[in-house]
Length: 337
Image 1 (cartoon, helix red, strand yellow):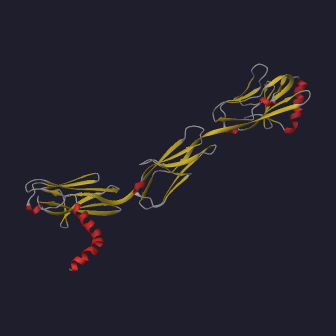
Image 2 (image 1 turned 120 degrees about the vertical axis):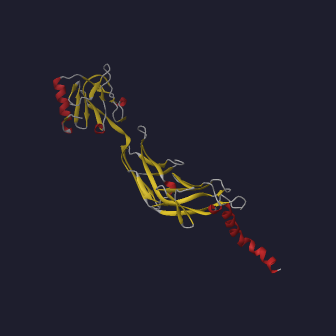
Image 3 (image 1 turned 60 degrees about the vertical axis):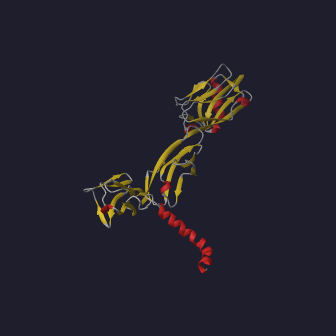
């Protein structure tokens, strides 16, 4: 705010000059003046000062800067003017308030008997805004990750972090989010929110991609009679997306007469058309990316041979192996007999 500055010790002399020049004014009602005012950046502030009918000299000051002397404007700021309703109000209005307007404002009057002042402190609030946030991140599983989100505002904003998928629960509070040994389940869109209750919170986002080696989560065999088409399938999960290959007896298979290989995203299917006895057996699907490799065995078999196309037989075997230590003490007496 552009004003005319005078030393504080000159203020009594300033009012004496006003009195000499005969500017009319009124005395202030100190009890009706506001102690402080809080406004949001960009809004209009009206700093109230009420007076009575006694003859006096009155002025508005910002620290030692004269803004108004009676009805005369000393400030060069076009945003500033007086609000005078009748003879009882001598209020200061500041439009489009900014942070540099914050500070003390004094309504000062001079009567024949004494001088009186009423000081109002203007507090300018600024909505929270994020001025710097981490770029999108791509890391390998197990790495340490630090995300940053820097914000300003008055009062100082609170910063919270959330991973939007799947639960969107709050992860941490503060400018930095530390993730030690990040896992694939922690990949996704992270939300940084800065708020200070002045306005709607400011929100930014950081996308985190976690690379990890392939894992074949489903391998499906096929029970197919001679003369029909059999379909073998593998589903894998990996980042980056895996590449697939099919093998039989250590021999890499490709699209050729009777065999068709299709790859769609993270799934591959091998179709054997017009199955013959020679086609029955074990097939291996292999998923690879730059971080690793994983393979699984599937079977093309004749109906009635008893193979489980979903691999549950291997699960059952694992269960028996787990139960064996518990059953062994019960079986030993029977074996001795």
